[in-house]
Image 1 (cartoon, one colour):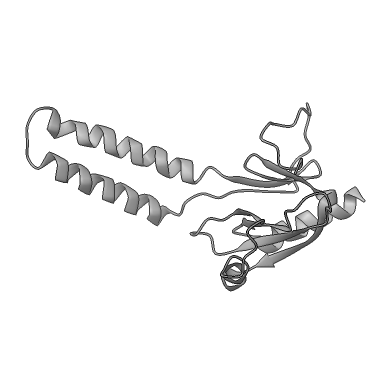
Image 2 (cartoon, one colour):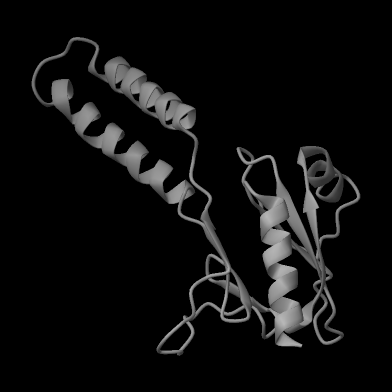
Amino acid sequence: MARVSQSPSPSSVSAPPAYAERLRLPWWLWLAGLAAAALLAVEVWMGAGGARAWVPFAVLLPAVVAGLAWLGRIRVAVVDGELRVDDARLPVRFVADAIALDAEGRREVLGVGADPLAFVVQRPWIPGAVQVVLDDPADPTPFWVVSSRHPVELAEALLAARDAAR
């Protein structure tokens, strides 16, 4: 379990990433979130004067923007011999295989028969994912499932980094 760390790596200079992406929200989720916040602010305002006229807009709209930005903060990268998913890090020497999944494959891996010990970073608005099968007898985690807009490229970069490390 020592592979997943919450602290940044102490390396002073890192190589350029073999693969990197940020799991941002699509534009339509921003539009829907802001429209819902504006509708709620109008419901609270309801034509009243004073602070009730501007406080709902001043509070709800920035709160929704912050929440949506927080949802799209996750970064996925293969760099310095590691798979980095947000704060979690997996050295590529523990990777047995990397399998690119489409929406149907992701649904099957994360469905009813899913392994509860799996490490999952899944974003429902991203259809693809990569299943990273682990080969570490000291760790009970059987695999990682990581959302990706380009699962084939992520799997190839991960396998190339693993082969280069060996």
